[in-house]
Image (cartoon, rainbow, N blue to C red; front, side):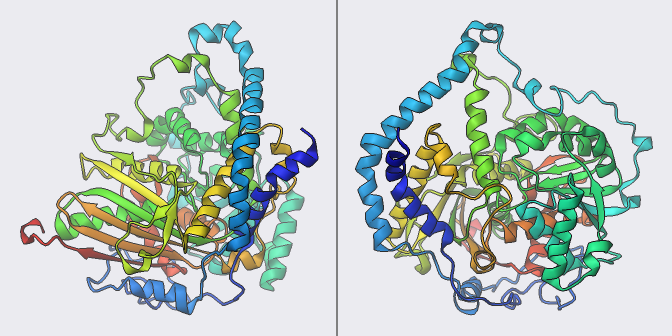
Length: 587
């Protein structure tokens, strides 16, 4: 197809998505203090924040008002929802017949040809008859980690030089994380000792110079310890992991670059967290290295950013509230997402890599061969299968919001493209909590102000997905999108936001509602903060972890209260309330 014709087909998509990614309120405000939240930690926080939270669990007063969090977002911070406008809506409507008659058939044809190109030859190989062990094709190991752990030679975690090392300091999120560490925790801090790591000394020093200029602190360039490491050269990884309590990694796509580092952290008893959203890769890592991590005491925690801490904490806390206040078990939960933000080249690279792997790693025998292996997210620490599981109730089209609160009565909801991942991670926390043997129905939706905005967001996602799986159009699409290392502007990062409203219903009819608010772009600026605080939480808050044993965990299943404390103390707002069933015998 000529380039001109393809560009015409994609014009409505570009109009829709660029208006979505570029929109952000024009106000620029400094971070507001979280005066609306009253908790053991946030009520005593000062400008010089306590680095180690109190040992007690995170508790709120029964009279906590959720409206105060909304007030901070809507009035104090003046956050405004994205509005696409009538032009984007008209363009979206006009693109529907073009998509149905031209773009979709062309994508189906070209994708089929591309699939057969990579997989037809497999029909004539031995893999067709015997199948292929997928895990043996992973970078970083086979189905077992056969390297023996000699625990006597490991440096005890409490004696290690660093509390955390940030790996991937020169990427888009990595730079934000370094800036956050320098600004929030300083360079000479006895309570949090940190360093940065990467594979290019020149790029790391350039990053430090830029941050020194940003923070007007020339000491940053020479005061931050630098460790040279590269996951493609595994001889460099021992020096990266052996003398730190935790590793925070931003180096993705993780299924391409992340496996060796997980292997070394598991072997050397080093806690690990990352910002991946790649569920299949995480399950493969569990299959390969969970036994090793249990032996060494390493806690491996993926999804420590926008994917999927906000939703994981929301579901876990609603479940805990129902159990503590009403002796009830969570049966269904809905998360409504209000957000404005941008997108980076690294995120897009992960999406495109996942699509590419899906095509190239296909095995024909998967069409008829029944997989009797246990889903790794359903496996309990003892190795048995959990009776509880998460059941999807995800929307596929737009509709009026179901939430009964006045805030959402006139608003519309549609699918959120990260919802399947958030559901899987939250489901893992439900399994590991072992508080219910019932299924939990999970619903998540993106909130829009009206039907036009909901349609534009929904249809834009469909157009993007269609173009992304089209091997002919994808190279054209990439020329209009940010490259790895590029991302939203500073104004978008500052003016963006993320707010998750959770609504949980218990088996006995009791209800719990929560709101978790991040005052900056959720995908990047807030993700950098979530990653750093997760790494610190793993390193120095071990006495507050939900489980003391090593292994693979979801964020809320291992750090729930401690991590929520840290997020609230560093800028987020959170509140939760209970509405008990009218039947007084139930609570």
